[in-house]
Length: 442
Image (cartoon, rainbow, N blue to C red; front, side, top):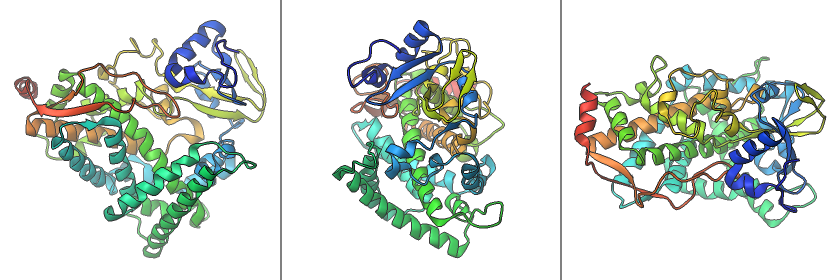
């Protein structure tokens, strides 16, 4: 057991502000396997070696325990299933998320429209809050992808924020007013999603992402159960905006801290007419994508995942016993100095080759059978945001600055990694436009 745990709270204070330091401290003291106390009754075994990623593919680990304390949020979703049942539910949902299908769907057009309007709004503000604005933008995007009419977005935001209170753990024996408040919001969301699914199935529409999900057939040719489609669309809304919003916010903060980054981004969009095609071009690696991937590396919103071990697992250091809650800290693996020299430095140029899902470079999207379905959508959305921002900066001769001129802040790690609230940026007339044009002409 790692030292420094507080009574009752355990290591939560260190996990909240200094999670990577906790991983490093434990590894130096005990090697890659050591115990931490993540709060009352939350004893976890940390595994800080890259070999931990292979355990995510092991059939003797399970995610279904997440629904024990978060049933209102995660019940009946892909995270609630393992093994054959997980494959049965996931198989008909997978095809719409391939790169080719994403490019051909409505996703790129929705992201482009929402991002352009949001950045134009920022141009008219004296300053804007990074976390709040990006979160609202990402939420709008995912709601529109799901099929919510623009005129109904305010109602969805209100109900969704109430539903997020289901992230407060509750057991089957203790159901307080917050749980019931969150469940009431979930029932409203599920009712609206049910109408969307029914309409898509009635029209057999498959050209949009959600249409393809709703009408996806399993191996036996039957449509997925309606309730499962609804639950996983709800999960898509949660996973599809919280994590992407965090990474876009970090990209923004690093853009604001570096005139050079802004110049390179503006040079990249010079003379480009089809920003969407550039964002999804698999034949080249744009600076915009490098910025987003570096934000994902340094600040993975899902900084670690926990699996319950359902049968003893042999590893190099010994045997992980059945029943163990195993914590795989992505944020530690993504700062491995062997694979990422000077890991504490934000360096987009370290992204020279496109990573393949399942490697450490994509660890922030999980691993094994639960690798994130929305991987390609997230990369496209983050890259497209950076490209559209660069185009506005270039066209309007603006630059992005911190209102207080301070350095890039340190992250908060719980419940998901995100920047501190209250940090504001502003768009001002550019003082170095000539350099950007010179780069574009090279």
